Length: 336
Image (cartoon, rainbow, N blue to C red; front, side):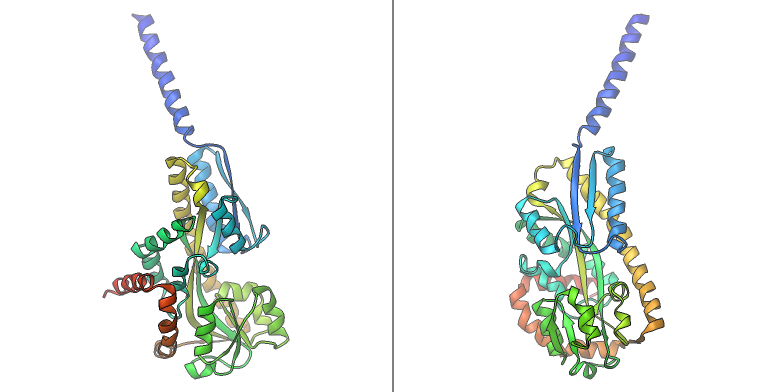
């Protein structure tokens, strides 16, 4: 009888060990290359650290993310193409550089689309976000989560921009993006497409009068040293996308896929919070060295009215279905 009980106990222990081993066996040893164009002290770094913590805890350290910062492993667009080819696992990139691959993402470049972060979250984290995720998958990219790049604001060396007429004749650097170019030309500026790395020198030498970026970028790039005026225009909001190669994703088992999605969503919470806190901190710091003006809701509405032709021109190019999905989600978010 004692011998029989001993056998049963041994069998139970062995079964427990096998179950435990089986649970860990769901995860293979994987080192995941994650690239992006920002520096490690950017809020994206906070999100990546959270992802690394979640993967370490959930996979017993088997799945690891190795991050490359500041474009050290190449730009976001080449990295995205590497994901599509299956030669790299992950990239965190703004939506804007991807428009050449997925034209529908141009919806997020439309001017004065979102009024605040709450609206952006509601659209991106709901059915509209899923609409774009399906477009990304069709292009060989799996979006694990929408993180935040944030609202863009205008700096210049000529005058405060408080009303739509103040844009007239200001020579502004914009991203190499057709919608941004159209938007600023329509507002009355002399819009100049230029690589980001050239902007500081161009401002310093007065080759251009101004540029537009989130507060954090304005502060960390030291644009306040060569710019006098900062206008809180909030003229565009761009998300970051945490992308995984579809070719490599399909080689993962369901448990590995699930833990990566969970890690990215946990990263989203802390990255968005850090981004918003840091933007407020950067604005407070910039107020000490620059002349800062807010734009009233009435003037922002006038600016939106001025750029309506940009919508008329670009919606057919983006795809009316994509823009309608966003507009319907916005209407719902606004209680409509």
